[in-house]
Length: 440
Ligand SMILES: Nc1ncnc2c1ncn2[C@@H]1O[C@H](COP(=O)(O)OP(=O)(O)OP(=O)(O)O)[C@@H](O)[C@H]1O
Image 1 (cartoon, rainbow, N blue to C red):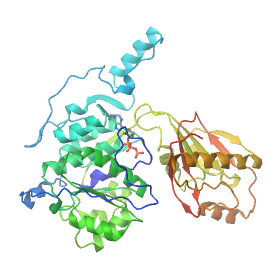
Image 2: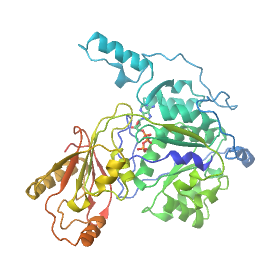
Image 3: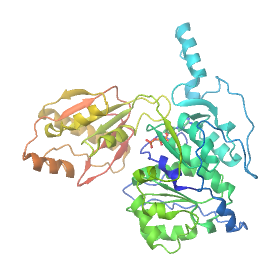
């Protein structure tokens, strides 16, 4: 599997999966055993693995479908796309809606509006093992990024995908990755054939969870290596053979350099050694570029402090309003000296409504945040709104620069209605994201 397949992975904190798997513990604790013990006595020669296609150079025309199926893969027959065969959540039309409105809705459905297309997963030339897992996850129709990238990836092409957060990129690269491992009869003794690189450990765990669901019927092995975990136990797992590995870059590099039992000879690891997402764009091999610009509303995100980069703000906000017809809002706290951040948001065309709160309201917010946190955590994180003792490095630095000891009126920017809360708050002295499904 070409590493380019991993370029679509941007991770996914706190999304609600329809059929949650036994998730690894929260990011503060030691994740569970992350490798399935599914070693088989597959007699296939390693030469077969040479077929892993990361040598493709030709750019495919966009929209091309994967027509040819590899031998041994259980394909599914083409099905007629029916408007009625939408996901359950879309099926029900509200009673009492005017006829004209209904007709309009039906028309829209038929056109494959939103992030979902009319293309069905059952039309994909994938194994029954993967297809049944997808079915159990209740996915019927592909999202746009999935419909436009999966066929290319199934053919072994490199794809560089770009679509908004929550648009289904994870399945877009995981399904073909799993299929390729399956087609090549990967077993644990073959080592790693796919590496998905995620920028944060939380995103890696989320991706791992999706992969775990998708691979439930497969014999191929799965695991993850992430910063902060026990290196030794990860090394042991790698030595046992992890076919699909989800990783954060630093820890991956560490294992690539230091873990003797880590078999990755079928991968072009020199790419990983130099890995940066930007560098992928400079790759001489021409990947198929799939860009999807989809439209959706937001759920609710609370950010206690501004990120270093405006694009991180957008990524954080994209933690919610996931999938088709997602809705939500974003709430950002800014100190007066941080208002400059708004310039960048405006340049990025982020629409904002601004509210100013006096200092005396801050303690009330603090108690709400504590309650919200306690809903979802056995050990709720301390979300400290005490601006003076705030642990955020960034804020400390900012205050130093500004030379002010006191902060009087934090600004709150909000948009839309509350449905879900993600607090990106200061956790004592470390900055970590915490996902809450409570309501503020
Ligand atoms: N075909 C589909 N039909 C319905 N829901 C889907 C489909 N594909 C993905 N989803 C759901 O949409 C949500 C977002 O998907 P996903 O996490 O893959 O987005 P993403 O593009 O990777 O986001 P990010 O860039 O923020 O990581 C998830 O909850 C997922 O379960």
